[in-house]
Length: 450
Ligand code: GCO
Image 1: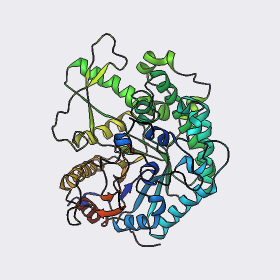
Image 2: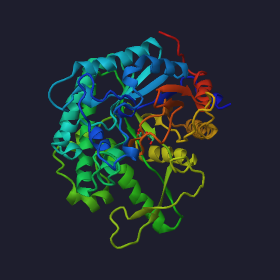
Image 3: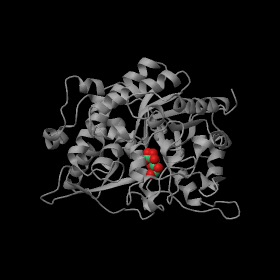
Image 4: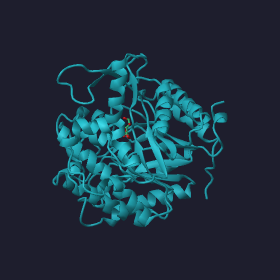
């Protein structure tokens, strides 16, 4: 019944990210990223877990591509590790790094699977942290060269490319809240990272178009689905401010060539220098965009005198269904957020580039009974069908994730995979949710070998 609600050209896929699955952290010329440094620092990740080995995907590429094929999906979203391609971020190019993604893309092609590559999913070469990382303007130009290098080699065979994964995490979670690498807790560092990353996006789009004009280019955002704690005027006003802080500080410059007004009134003086031409560079026409959605953010007005902009505080879940990572399950916010974004911006085709749930069931006699994950997926995929019915150009859906992997600060204890990974043996077991997803995905497109 669910399948019948989608047009026949709709694409179902699975998603991963380099540092979360690859392992082989010191092999074939790869140098450390900020995530290698961060995860090796005591107290930063659960249990001191790191991506040193992860799912050992680097050594199990063919087997894992077979697994993707086995899941019946039409498209695979993965990320490219900058520290494999240009190990110091700037300077020499490492051909062995490019070779790995060459094999990955060709392996997908052989199996009839489309490829959607993200250039940056958080593994910034550690050498660049010595220049200030994302807080340093020079990092935007280093990214431009990296984008150029990747597209020169792989651009002839990629089906889609994104500059960044989740600007919100790169800027706020990593530089203001200190939860992700590099673990900064400074509004000044975060504002500098904001402008550098936005600039890098614009320069990156230009570089991609120059090297590979036929590859559709976009960006993947985890815009927050901000829900008011009540319909009181002060909470509604807090919602608009929170929207500017969490979402519009990325999409306004990218899609309208300006930073949002209230945001600038609050932080303009602390922003790094915005040079002539920066906003034009950032404001690039996109071929597509991706939304990663997991849960809503419930917001109330924060009236305390020292509350910084957006003077909004997060309130407790309204709906008491939580996943194992403690995130509220609430699918209606997904549809609301998408409609809100199309009302506010002139947006091209979109994809759900990540959606999924953390449930930590283990295999019993070779079976992983993860019914709540299936329920989560089916509820959210059903909202996607509603969104299409409402006339929004939603073209595909990627489940997060292909397999259990390194869940950043949460280490390996939080599992999002359709496939279970035993980290001792590296054995993969398709969960019940994976079997369910396969049945849905297989009714779309063609996974025939080309
Ligand atoms: C992301 C992420 C993933 C996470 C997932 C679950 O936030 O982009 O791409 O890396 O694993 O979101 O937290």
